[in-house]
Amino acid sequence: MNQAVLEKDATAEAKLGVIDCDIHPALSTPSELSKFLPARWRDHLADYGPRSANPVVGTLPYPRMTPGNGMRRDSWPPNGGPPASDLAYLQEQLLDPLGIEYGILQPLAAGSSTLNQELGAAMCAAANDWQIDKWMAPEPRLKGSICVTQEDTPSALAEIDTRIGDSRFVQIAIPPRTIEPAGRRRYWPIYEAAEHYNMPIGMHSAAYGWHTNSGAGWLSFYIEEHYAFSHSLQSVVTSMVFEGVFERFPKLKLVVVEGGFAWAAPLAWRLDKQWERMRSEVPHVKRPPSEYIRENVWFTTQPIEEPENNRHLLDTLRWVGTDRLMFSTDYPHWDFDDPRFAFKVPLSPTERAQIFRDNAKHVYRLP
Image (cartoon, rainbow, N blue to C red; front, top):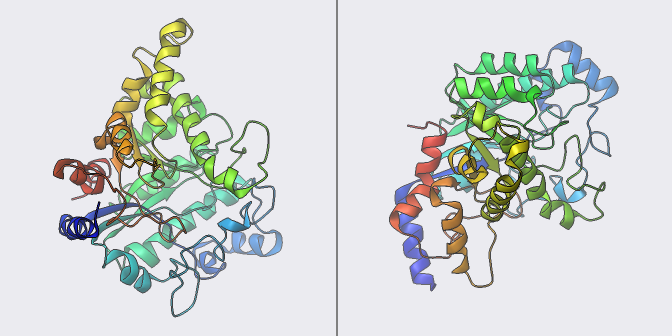
């Protein structure tokens, strides 16, 4: 595809409007969240720090993921602070020039994987207040994720009830590497609340959680960890299908964030074949797994799997379904996708509108 065509598409995209389903807001300083915490937990963090499920306490497992290494080189605000910590610069670099109609905030490590679950609940509540105060109140284009402690169901439900009346929050955020498989009944009250309120569950891949991305322990290299993001999310989808989550909650919406999507079609084929042979083990799964995936699961587009022959991507898009895909940039991370150049394949106007705007408007109930 030549440059003239790309520029024409970029102009059309700007007119269309884009919904970015994966923006990572950052704290200006590590202590910024403290003002939203009760004094008890401020003192606790000062004396003991957060107790996370990571092998290195208080940090992400890989230096490549830290603000100094894993970000776009041009994303550092001129006034100081880490990338995506300054609203004015985020507006200038992302929202305004790329025609972002709405951006979905995806806070990472908000407390959902903190071992002290009472502290985790307080940190999740603080992260939600922080989203309102720093981002959503001054910028209506930004929409929030309700951070919850999924391992402490009563606290999670209480936080959902607290935030559900605020239309600026558009999804419930749960990390995929939960302490038990995501389909287990301990999480069903959260799914029940999500279905009741027509609020999607967003599961974002991350370098933290209660388990590793592999079945054999912590991986040797960052490249392995980055690739394996899709592994935990495939496990999430498989568990939720076979444990009967989507049969029990047929209107539940699951958004798979930053885990890739090319695997969705072959996973569905494989699950269907296994279900045909062993459906007697799971009589509560009344339909082929692919039908639940097609009806209940959506995928954000970054990172896009890109074959050597770009036209082969069209097969993947249509296997998964362009009505299941929602555009995301992953701003400000190093593997950021620019909406002007993210799909170097010919898409119909309807397909482009679905991926870049319309699917997200439906899932997140945006005006």
